[in-house]
Length: 620
Image (cartoon, rainbow, N blue to C red):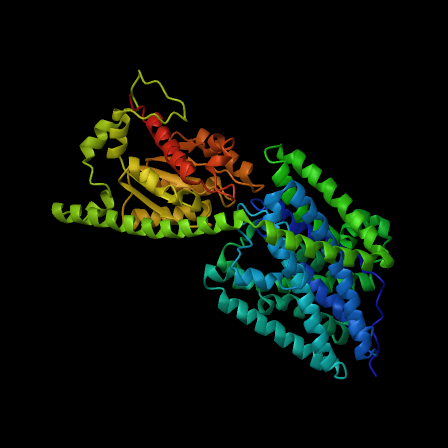
């Protein structure tokens, strides 16, 4: 008979690791421009859950199926109770004071309550890393659905293997881990599969199953080895750093991170869990008050996690435009207060069931209310997506026409370099004569003066633009071409500044650059000066116009300040201040508060035109 592993009531270092998981995920939600890899911290939660779930099952070996089912139902109530309560409270508040939040969030109520929110995200292809204009306060609760699915899977496997020895169990869970890793690597080939990988049960179960496997491996093999205290300390510190550093470096929008980085991070997290577990069991003796704050965060991590994103979305909705530091302080206080209150409420098991029933009834009522009042924003967003997709196709055709014109000109001149020299069919001498930057009598017009003179329109019609952009500029394409027929746009939804240099370089190599470069890549969280430097180098002395951004995400001010600082320090870099223009004109934006509508797209184009005219000192 195997000797049962003696477990402590609580492992403070594993609690600290759970705190690290919460901090990593929260930093990603709130400051994704600084901590783009914080999303990896969910792996910490999943792996620890697997490790501790197996530990708990190992201490309850002799219970029957009926008791196991009772344990599962109690766990279900413990996990879902606070979720249902929070959803009912915030949805009622949203209906009364934040209709957009209500409309965006109501679609997740049933999937979260029935534990298939992660599956819904795959079915509707909702990008976790691109939430522009999305006020869904339950966007993070896919994790709860996935966690409950893993618990159910574990209990089924445990039921079938309960009478088998630990070696068989270890093999089963290791096989699940390996198969899951292989599936992730195979899917990690196209950006279109990121949502599938991120929310897939089969791809994400690797972390949970590895946690189970490591507990069994440690119990039956590693615990028999004697690791020195210094060795475990060095391993703990090293592995801890390896868990934190990726928060700053890994980008979840890049499919490459799902090939091996995801797998490597999972293994590192598993090794860190083993190290902390064995170190505390054999050497670490500490009063809880020495780790008071960390222990508190770890103990309350689930409740903190449930409230963090909810509070963040409400602060974006209600406190938009207020100093970021002040908003962050308000958020922190609100998160801790609300999570503590929820923890206290659900600590009382008598209140627990009553609140759950009340919450379920409230959510049913809110869902019926939503069906009766409708969701106008959903229809608008659907139309916006169709419009962007249609314009992407039109842009491809227009760009092909521009290529053909350039090729024809090149053929007429019998000059092989013609294609790369110009895409606009404008004579070089004519362009030289248009350059009026040395005009001493020029008086700059207001940035929002869109009353263009005949001379200004004539100037614009003779210059050419190469542009790299995201979805914001796509719908403005036709409006820009009204002024500048020789316009080449490479635009794509979800793109950011990081991809700018590579795309611009490709255009330069295969088509050639126009007289002016316009970059509209600020909407998706990045405006690194290093990327902007590379864009300027590729531009070869041309003027580059960087359009800043206006949206609802927390990183907007960071991106806009970075663009402004860069343009202020580079003579050939110029900022087009879309944010300043649009911030008081909500009627010029689509329902997502990010993309310009028809009048907004017209203004977006005119804003670029006026900046070009002012920079080049074009006289009226």
